[in-house]
Length: 369
Ligand SMILES: Cc1ncc(COP(=O)(O)O)c(C=O)c1O
Image (cartoon, rainbow, N blue to C red; front, side):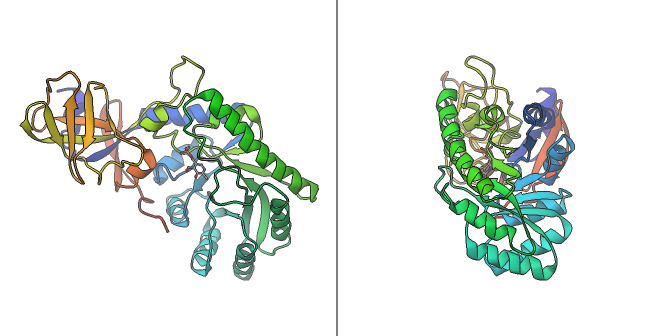
C-alpha cells in the first residue's frame, strides 16, 4: 500500500479528491498567461462551485469570479468573494430582488439582452439605492442568449447608460461550442470568427459615444488564443482549475508540447464486488460521476477501463485481460466533465503531496436557481 493509500484509508468512498499542489499550478499558469498579455482574469466558478477555491484564485491575481447562476453568486459572496459577474441573464422580480440584496454586500455585475429586463433591473436598483454594473451579452455563435452582433448592442447599451441604478460596463461574448475543438488551428479560426462578431458590437457601442470598458468572455479552450488576440479585456476560463478528461484531449499548447494543465480532480472509488473473473465492481455510478462528457478514466492505470453499471455501480475491466484488483481495493477515476461531477458532491477532500489536508465545502453545488 502506498503512503497515499494509507492516508486515504480512513476516507469513505465515493469521495471527490482535489490535489492542491496541482490546483495552484493550474491557477498560476492561467493567471500568468493573462497578466503577461495585460488582461484581467475573472475565472468561472461554475466549474468548482467552492469559495475556498475562488478565494485562492483572487489571492493569486483574479479580479473576481464569474457565476453562472445567482445562487452560485450568493454562495461565493457568503464565502468572501466580493466581485462577481453573473454570466446568465437574471430575469423576473423574484430573482431581481435577490440580485439587489446581493449588491448591498458585494460588487455585482450582470448580463442582459432585453430592454424590459433592463427596465426591471433599473427600477429595482434605483429604488433600493444600489448600483449594478450591466453588460450587454452578444451572441458570438453560441446561439443561446445574447443580441445579434449588429446595432442592437449599442441600442441596449444606450438604454442602460440612461438608467438610474445601472452602470454600463461593456459586452460579454462567449462561444462555448468551440472550447473543446481538439485541433488548435481549427479552434483558432473559430475564436477569431467569434471575436470578430464581438468587435463589430463594440465598435457600434463606441460609435454611439459610450465607453466599452469591459469585453469579457473566453474559456479554458480559447484561452491561449484569447491572450494573443487582444479582443477580450477579461477572461472567464472555468475548467482549467480542476480539469477533466474532455479538456485533456484539447491541444492548448503547440503541437507535440506537453499539456499545460494537470488533473487535480479525481473520484476515489472502492471495489465492492468481484464475483466474475476479469471484472470488478466499484461504488461509483451515474450518481457520483457525470456521464454527459463520456466515461471517466482510471488515473495512472491506462490498462483499466471504467464503464457505468447503474446509478451506484461502475465496472472495471483490464485491457490486459487479467485484473489485479481485490475486494476493498481503491482506485482513482478522472471525471470526463468537471462541472457536472463537482455538482454531485458536498465537499472536496483536499490533499497535498499525498497527505489529506481536510475538507472544503462545495457551497454552490445544486445552486441552479
Ligand atoms: C459564460 C461562460 N464563460 C466561461 C465559461 C467557462 O468555460 P470552461 O469551463 O470551458 O473554461 C463558461 C462555461 O460554460 C460559460 O458558460
